[in-house]
Image (cartoon, rainbow, N blue to C red; front, side, top):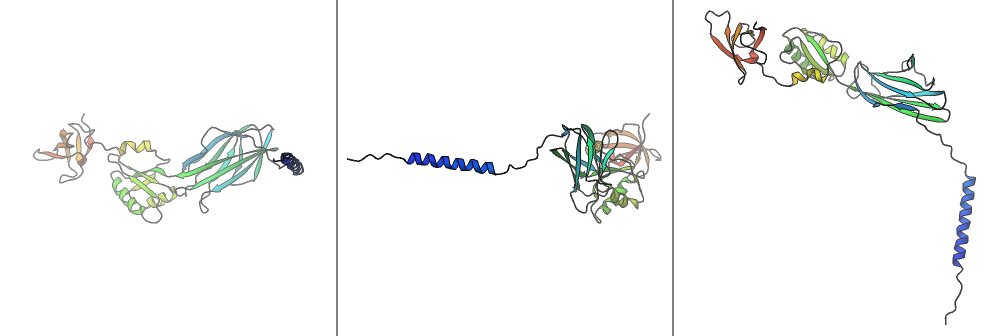
Length: 302
């Protein structure tokens, strides 16, 4: 017969667990509490914090700062995307005056809150493609803090170059040849047919664009400001060269054996994009059929 022996192991296990729990509690009481800095939402903004801007233009952000206290300290950090990049001019202003400027930097400024601010980042004219700047603002009010980062990224510009009338293609060809010399500053050149006296130039560094066009004799100057894609879209869709020409128009032949002669439009073939003209100064009026892009309208039919 087996003898029954009482099992005290469970009681021993419970006693051991009680010991370790007591020991853990005593250690927690002895360990100092970790200091934590409370965060709160002090910055309020309703727009994208990353913006693209062309050379010479300004990226702007509007935001507000608020806290439970009546004042706060703003500190600034400006980080260029490239060490040798030209400096961006950064400024912060409220409704009445400028609060901070990177030209005369201060590590921090005291502000009253709540208040609306505008942050501006001016893109330098000497930027390269992809140059950027990151601006980080940190607000501190008592034991509360918050931070907000903004980024401005340089993008290319579409500029309008004024040329001598009927020398658009010559200017475009000369500029295209110079575009491959030295650093690449010209990305695209558009000389639309029918647009007289102007050429579209896409580039990054506006200063070097001016340098490359300065000694082109038939080039005049860049129009102030820049063009948008919407401005050039009509020229990117091919149109028939006979569009806008009607019978009776006086035209000038711009190429072929009769180049420079004036003629009157007699017939228009929309399908073949050809027109039949009659030379005005010819001894015997002989109809001549030419391509629509071989003439230039100089007088409309009345």
